[in-house]
Length: 465
Image (cartoon, rainbow, N blue to C red):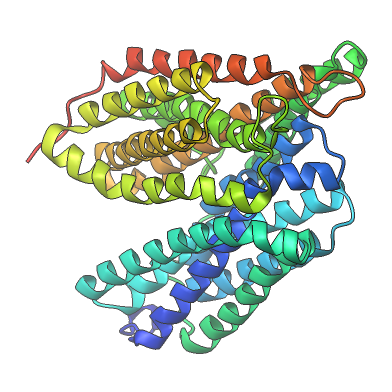
């Protein structure tokens, strides 16, 4: 008789609290780069394009790790996989804390990206060890604490980096992650696998997708230097094409693909992916450009804001993003998903164009960034929900993983293109880009976002209650 038939061991409030503490710590560690990116660029002599690469490396790893983490959780037990993932995250946080240069810091961010798979594993543990009613409450609490940790990291990163050093802004949340991981290991019981260990892991697909995403980021980062390094860029584009073709071929033939591309044939799925990509491109342009604009010298066109001030200015956007999920859910039930997505697209496009026209006052950036965060949350939440409910239960993970990968690619492309614009617009011997680069970036992002209306108008209205 196998142990999988045994009733699950109940966990108490201390165990849920430990998962909540882990969510706070990982949320804080994930969020420290955005408000301090201008500071990191100065201290590590990074170009804007290199800064954009740093800002998305964690997300790229997360997109790769998350689909595999769920399968490993089924195979070996959620608690075991969660602890091992957090060991990788802790190692990444320590590497980031001691990093003397950009390559080492990039390595640290790659390792930290394993944290993206931690939240779904926490949900698996909660659902396995708690009754349905209690598990829903616990999942809501853990999700909320992760968002709260992100806000805390956004606020604290600047003061810590300026008062102590950039090393401590990684070290302190890493110490918190280590402590909360030890608590989780002590309080969460070991569980047997949820299913038989015959579901394969698509390692070739994982390797090829890793190569595709990393090469894509390198191509975008080097794009401003095409005149000086055309052969290098051409070689990278060739490698990118080979990785992409190889990944598509492998995924179409794999028995248990990492990302089932056949799912893209379904209209609900490919429309969600297209919309998610476009919306995330627009969002990431603002996420990258607004802190750069705030940090630009006040005697030029910026505000000369330090990392602490940038964190405070970005906080309203973080709060708005936290509220967007519930608002999107309520709106979809009342008016349908198409109405929510259309509203988000119009709101985001208007905010981006407004930032291009008006960015001379601090409140312009605060309001614009908050509107974009709200619009992104409305759209992405509606898209994930719509995708998850438009396919069979057995296909939910496959379909939502496609949206996840598309989201990360959209964020990465938007950030890298923004960094490339600023790099190309920076005069020789200066570290201040021309103001026109920001205007161009916001306008292009607004135009790209507006094109999403062509797809949104073909969506089904969705359920209304």
